[in-house]
Amino acid sequence: MAISVKSQREIALMRESCRLLADVFQNMEKAVRPGISTMEINDLGEKLIRAHGCVPNFLHYNGYPASICVSVNEEVVHGIPRKDHILQEGDIVSLDAGLIYHGYHSDMARTFGVGVVSREAELLIERTKQSFFDGIKMAKAGNYLYDISNAIDASIRPYGYGIVRDLVGHGIGTRLHEDPQIPNFAQKRRGPKLQPGMTLAIEPMINMGRADVEWLDDDWTVVSEDGSLSAHYENTVLITEGEPEILTLY
Ligand code: MF3
Ligand code: CO
Image 1 (spheres, helix red, strand yellow):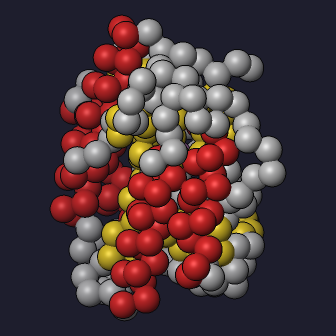
Image 2 (cartoon, rainbow, N blue to C red; image 1 turned 90 degrees about the vertical axis):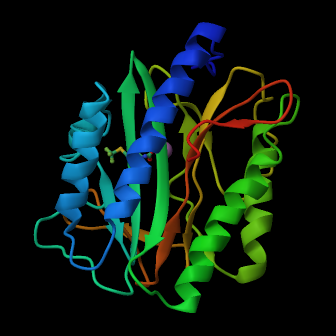
């Protein structure tokens, strides 16, 4: 499939979809504290999405049973919310969510510390976020897609963390996952040329230890194989004639 290039009308809808999602995140972040269950975070997020008149795009996606992916500690992504999974002081929790606004999808993720977390955990979260920003310095029309991948890789490499390879970023628009796939590790080829109007979900997933991941028996939850902490930072980004527009910041 060709990479979709959005019209001005579509870009306006993408912007609004992403703005509403960022608002949902801002409110979910406030709820993160020791004692809350991962299901309560899901329920809050879903309620906020629906209060905007939007639909959670993760719910029932390929059979995923919830609206918000809540992944704790060694869980990398796609954690399934549970009533009996209570966040503890010192945990780190990754929230990943998206919504559909007038047919247009948004997608973003953040990792938060629960109460006071270790210095090592804080650094992992901060450096994962920084790798996103280093990556999108390259997200300019005329550059190539894998310039972004290479920049994320170069940002993380000095720390010796594991860059997850089994999951990647993606194009986004009238579908949650569109072409192209966007790896977070260095590529030999340069990939497609970036054009104004492309909208991309760029999402480094970084393990404190090794890069290897495995799937739990629920067929969804991805965990680091070595049990090390994992962080995730994702925004939906618009390629423009100039600097990229990060549509899901708050
Ligand atoms: N944000 C996730 C991604 O792009 C989508 C999760 S789909 C779900 O990888 F079904 F797991 F919710
Ligand atoms: Co995504």
